Structure formats: C-alpha cells, structure tokens
Amino acid sequence: MKRDNNHLQPNPDPSSSLGGGSSAGKAKLWVEEDCGMDELLAVLGYKVKTSDMAEVAQKLEQLEEVMCNVQDDGISHLASETVHFNPSDLSTWLQSMLSEFNPPSSFDPFGAAGTTAAALDDSFLCGPAESSTLSTLDFENNNRQHQKSGQQIFEEASCSDYDLKAIPGKAIYSPNTQPPTHDSSSSSTHNIVKPEKRLKSTSGSHSDIFPPPPPATAAYGIPSDSIRPVVLVDSQENGIRLVHALMACAEAVQQNNLNLAEALVKQIGFLAISQAGAMRKVATYFAEALARRIYRLYPQNPLDHSLSDVLHMHFYETCPYLKFAHFTANQAILEAFEGKKRVHVIDFSMNQGMQWPALMQALALRPGGPPAFRLTGIGPPSHDNSDHLQEVGWKLAQLAETIHVEFEYRGFVANSLADLDASMLDLRPTEVEAVAVNSVFELHKLLARPGAIDKVFSVVEQMRPEIVTIVEQEANHNGPVFLDRFTEALHYYSTLFDSLEGSASGQDKVMSEVYLGKQICNVVACEGVDRVERHESLTQWRNRFTSAGFSPVLLGSNAFKQASMLLALFAGGDGYGVEENNGCLMLGWHNRPLITTSAWKPANNTSPTSTITY
Image 1 (cartoon, rainbow, N blue to C red):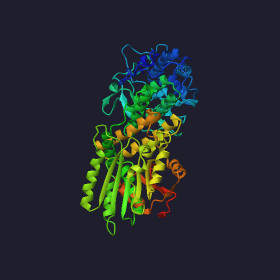
Image 2 (image 1 turned 90 degrees about the vertical axis):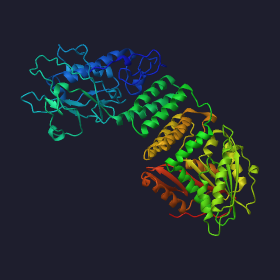
Image 3 (image 1 turned 180 degrees about the vertical axis):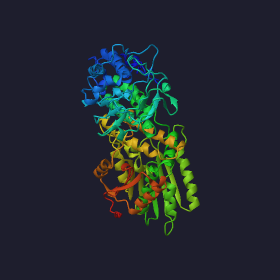
Image 4 (image 1 turned 45 degrees about the vertical axis):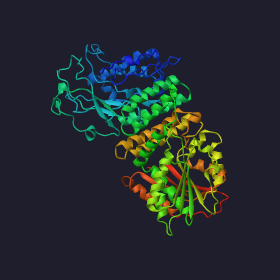
C-alpha cells in the first residue's frame, strides 16, 4: 500500500509549523542534526540518515505492496523460520525483507498509475531502541488443492510494545480502490477476501484460535470487489507514544535542545487527538505549558483575583478535595476551641469564605451556647480595586445573625503572607481569646521567595495559636531538576484529571479543569519568583514545621469519620479514599494521595494534644 512520503523529506526550516488532519498533510516530524541522522527517529530508536529518508520511504511502500499482492507460495518459506533484525538499521532490514519476498519480475512496486491504498500505520516507525525479532508470517492459500483452508497468522515473537503488529482498535478506511493483481499465472480473476492478521501468543492449531474465514464472494453482504483495505489504530499504543513524547520533550527542554523540543511538542498535539477523556486533556495542558516554555510565552500577569475565585468555586463544587480540606480543618479547630468563650480564626486563604459557615453552625450547636467568634480573613488585592474581602464578611455576618452567633470580622489585603506582622492583627491575651490559624493551599506559594516561609512561621509563633491547620497538595513540584518536577507533575495531574472524569459533565467540571490547567502551566512554564505552585509532600512540610519549632497535633477520629462520610456523597465514594498518616489525613484517588491535612502548634504551647483512635 502506498502513502505520500513528502513529509519525510528534510525540513529546511525547523521552526516551521506542522500541518494537521490528513496523512499527506502531516508536517515534518523531525529536525536535522550535524551528524546527518534524523533526530526524531533517533529518539524512537532508529538510526536513519537524512539522505536515506526518501529511499527508506520508497522501500516501505514496496514492502507494503508486496505483502498485500504477492502470491502466498512466493513467501511460504517465511512460515518456517524467524528472521532476527536490529530495528536501528531500518534501511538494511527493509532491503532484506524485500529480497526474502522476491517478487516476480513483472511486479511493479509502485502499482498502476492513479492507484491508492490504505495508509501505512505510523506505529511502524516507533520501533524499540533495543534489538527484537520480526514476527513470523504464515500465509496459506485456500485455493491450493493440497493445502487446508487456512488463514493469515501473525505470530508475536517479541514482547516489545512497538513491534509491527495488527492491533484491535478503530478501523480507518483508505480510498475505495483495490491493488492490482500482477501474477499472470493465477487462474483466478477475482480478488480473494482474506481474514485479518490476528495476534497469536501461544502455539496451537489455527482452527483452535481463529474462526473460519468469511466467504470469498462477500463480507456482511458486500461484494468482494468492493472490500476496502483497513488499517487498525490502537489508541492505547498511541497513549504510550504520547507519554514517551511528553517525556522526551521535557528532557529536550532541560538540555536546552529547543529545536528537538519544538518538533516533539508539535507531535504531542497530533498524538493527543487519538486519546479520549483525562489523558487527552492532561496532554493538551502539558503541551501548552511546554510550548510556552519553549517559545518563552510566559503568563504576563498573575491570574485576576475575580477569575481565580470563580475557578476556585467551580473546583469546590465539582470534586471533594476542597470540601475534605474544610471539613477536616474545621473539625480540628472545633476540638481545639472546646470550652473557650472567645475564639479567633486567622485565615490565610480567605477566598470566598466557603469554609466558615459550617464551623459557625457547629459552634452555634455547642452545648452551653456558642462562643464569641472573631474571623480575620487575608487575601490578595483585587485588580478592579473592589473590596471583595469586605463583601465576604457581610455575608458571614448575616449568617451569624441568623444562627445567633456573636460575630466580628476584619479583612486584610496582602500581596504575600510574608508581608504580615503579628501587631497588625489586634491579638488579645490567650487567657481572653483562643487563636487558630488556617491555611489551605497557600504556604507552598511562599517557597518562591527566599526566607518568606521562615518569616511567616515566626509571625505565626507570635500569635500563640491553640492550633495551626494546614492543607497542601501531596506532591513534590519544588525540586531543582526540571525533568523530575515535570515527571512528578505529569503523574499527579493525570490522577487529578482522572478523578474528575467521574463527575457530572457541565460548567463546573470544565472550569475545574481550567483551574488545574493554570497550575500545570505555572509548574512547567514558569521559573524564579513567577513559579509559585511549589507543592511539597507531607514529609517535607513536617521537616519544615519541626525545624521552625512546631509540634504535631494528631487529628482525631471524628475528622476521619466526617471525611469518610463526605466521600460517600461523591459517586458513592468510588475511587476516593482517606488514609491516616502519623496523625495527618490524606485524601487520594485509587491509592494515590493527592492532598493532606495536618495540624500543628508552637512547641512552647503546653496545651494537651488530642489522641487519635481508629
């Protein structure tokens, strides 16, 4: 079968964009190296010189034509032996295969003028870097009197994921034409319908593995002369190639090989099209982030606070992560405030204040009556100069009046938590008022500026809180090596996007994906103080807090039970799981922890620590 080979010609302009859509319109997928080797094929394990590309393409066409049109008795000798080859020497192997087939002299490898056939599967070019074996082909002619009626058998002789093989998948039809029959000695003037090549993993009789071949005259009621060749496409294999392309592109970026990175990031776009669901979305966001890094198209300004709040609320509604964070933190704060008459919560992550109505209602139901509740909310400035923190306070004040809770609120606008000072917060003696500090997905942003996290730890210690509740992503996106960060982020966000697939489709889900996509862009594309999504694992945060003079507070069994009940509201909790880790609670998807709630207090605070029982 033929395919256009124009896209295999050397690309004189590595910066030129790739075409899309049809096989003939696929753009150049490789760039030249000084040594003359095709760089993109070299990444996939093949060593093909730039000058040999046209010849290799021609041999591929010839081999495909021969395999479809040569008579079975001309290649029957291949059924009795296995041909070993080195996939890196692609040109030599093609030549040896053509010589093995030994087509008749009258055979025209290019076919009649105007004749076309199914396109060659691109997965043929994605061979392994190591030596492997060519699968044995067993062709039986059901027109020969002394042979049994058989089928074409494709015996898998290698465990490689990238060997040439027929793979179940979507059927893509080529133009409705048939390759001409060139063997004049054949007595039949009709094209014989042959069964597809099938995988065979174990030895045995052909009839035990495959069903009988369809009648030669028709298939599903369609005359045999109208049957079109079929190329089977495997989205799972393309998914593997997509991950490999993402990793290869990230490695090229780390090595500052921008020409190769540019070619690979364009290939990622083509491969992502064949995927569905979470994989396609994740690959698209990572490809965009890589492209921004390659072309230095960094985000110009921080995300508008109003848009950030909108995305945050949609993420809250779509999945249980933020609800888990609020429920577990609130339960720890509620237990720390037990018996206190006046309480003060200092929230480092105020946003829309969605965490606090539930705590206020729990305080209102406390035996002996609710305490006086003071809330200090801290948030970034708004781009439109609106006082959004004050608007949140008004809404909470209305709720407090409804449930009869004495309420006091104050909002602070700060570009960074490191700008805070304890004297600004109107702190009262601990004998009068108990303090709790709360932070959800905020502390990791301080790691972009040297010394910022230490300053915040010092300010928190001056507040002398009863408890400090911290919720952070369970990931390590703050390492010094870009490729390591990229790999960790790819695994982490793939899991997050996969968990969103179980949510009902709608605006909330779409906006939640945008919310996560913004984080991906920051982790991959940005550096220096602009890279604020510097997530760290629980172990790393534990080391930071203990070094700063804080002691852990064990989250009680009530927090664990409430978190478990919360998950039951989301698709019955299928896929989600809560795990206890040394007094901290982790929420994960299919055994992969994604966020962690932990609680701390200054080491000089002698109030008793709660116990944990499960």
